[in-house]
Image 1 (cartoon, helix red, strand yellow):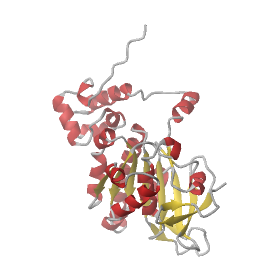
Image 2 (tube, rainbow, N blue to C red):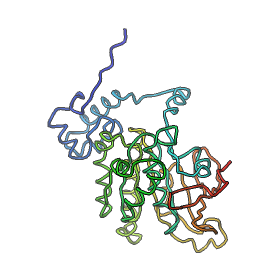
Image 3 (cartoon, rainbow, N blue to C red):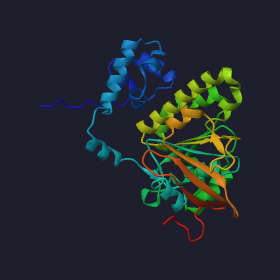
Image 4 (cartoon, one colour):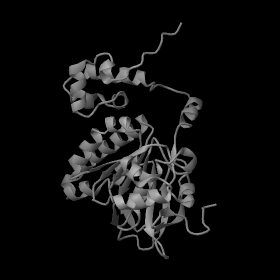
Length: 325
C-alpha cells in the first residue's frame, strides 16, 4: 500500500526546517515551499545552513509539490495547465499562439514609443479577466524601472473591458526599482506576495534599463551578464512555480551595419537575455495613426511572422477589420 503523501503548508513544516531556519530563509527571500522547490543549493546555503542541509530542504520541497521525472505524454497533460493572457489584439494573440503564456518568459523589445509599456499596462488589466475572456482571474506584479507606470492608463483600460477601475488597480501590486540591486531584491522577495495575492502575471518594465546605465564599459560586462542571468532565472522559476506569465520589456541598440535589415536594432542583454526569453517580439512604429508592427523573432514552436495592432485610448486593439484571421 502506497504511503499517504504529506502536505506541507509552511516552510517550517518541511523536514530539516525549524523556526530559526525558516526565519533565515525568509530573510534571503524564500517564504514559500514553491520557491524552495525551485531554489539552488548555493542560494539556500547563503542562509548559513550548510550545503547538505540545503539539499535536504530542496529535496523535501520538490517532493511536496511533485517535481519529478515524467513521460512526454504526462508532460503534455501537465502543459494543459498552461494559461494564456490576451494582449487585447486578436492579430497579436494569433501571432504568439493565442496570447502570452504562463510558465515562460515573453520579451517585448523596441525603441522608445514602440508600445512596450502600453502592452504591459494592458496585460496587467487583462490578466484579471475570466478565462473565457482571455484572462486568468488573477493579479499582476509590476516592477517599474523607468517610472512609466500610469494609474490613469490602467483606469482607462479597465473601464473599457468592463472592470471597475479601483478594483483593477487594487489587483496590481506595484513597486518601483531604483537601481539594479533593488530590482533584483524586489524579485527575490516576491514569492510570498505572489502566493498571497494569486499573482498570475509578473512584469518587469524594463528588464535592462538599470543594468545598462550602471555597468558601463567592456570591463563591467561579465558582472552585468552574470547578474542578469541570475535575475532572469529567478523570474523563470517563479513563473513555473506559480503558473504565472512573466513579461519583460527590453531596450535596443542600433546595428549600424544593417541598413536594409527588417531589424536595424538589437535587444540589450546579448545571449543571456536571448536564451532565457522563450518568446521574443520586436515592436516598431508603422505608417498610420498609433499603428504598431509586432514581429515574432524567436519562439520554441511558432514560426516567425508579423502582426499589426493599434494603441488607442481604450488600450491595445486590432486595426478595423483585422483580427489576424
